Length: 346
Image 1 (cartoon, helix red, strand yellow):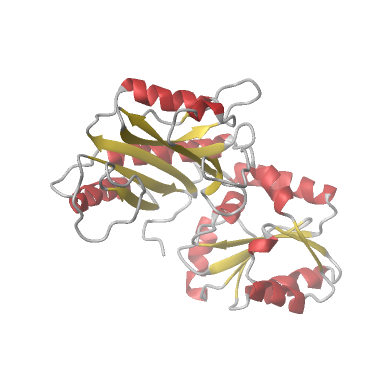
Image 2 (cartoon, rainbow, N blue to C red):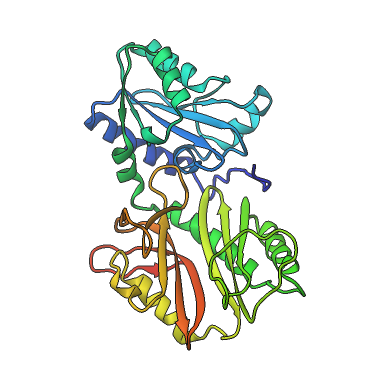
């Protein structure tokens, strides 16, 4: 469950932006002969529905039903008492409350056309119980996987999405600059406090407390001893946009040359050769609903290279004089022949 304030800013996410995204989706649905499209959301898989409507749930789950010829409807497993809040933060025609979201969504689609063709974004990731309810509520509906269709629409970031991701990156950068204290707990508390003050919907801090022993990030509970060098990773959400930022602290001190090597490697994405000489690297981004899905990297076996103009978050480990140093920042990929660029400087 999230703890930060979730609200909608018409200045940062205007109706015109959501209308343009919806128009693109409907054009793709028409080409694919779909009468409706369904997108699932919960607090960990919120990115698909938030991209179309601005809605980000604190908890529970919902289905967004997008008919080809009518306005979207959100079917939520939340109680009626949050209806007015959902209507304030979402651009949908109606909000329907029910514990069986699949059943109600199917009935609504079938009421307009009993044998409608229905695409489902990330069908394989949808819970079996919801799929069963969709079939029960609309026994004549034809359900198909619309993952590729939706992923193509989400592949290229629009200006509003870039602006929100940049804001999230600035929040993370500002928060990590406040990393100070006598222990790791104090440092993490200072970073999280500053991120909340700057408007983060959510922030998760992971730490590699002693890079000389273990460079893996983990959630920290209780007090942990710091090594000669350590790293923090801030995962920040702002208005539905998620980014990761990584900074190393201690010895060796990160220098301009090391940061430049990381930026140069990022610039060559989606090509991999820039990361030759790095111990490890990872590129994450959003394809459907998971905000930061592993797309490619040194340990990713099923690579899904991002498209031109995609937003990604990149992490890498570079060894300097035999000592590991971790870097990470969000980036925007270029078009054909254009270099990718970091949203904020390290």
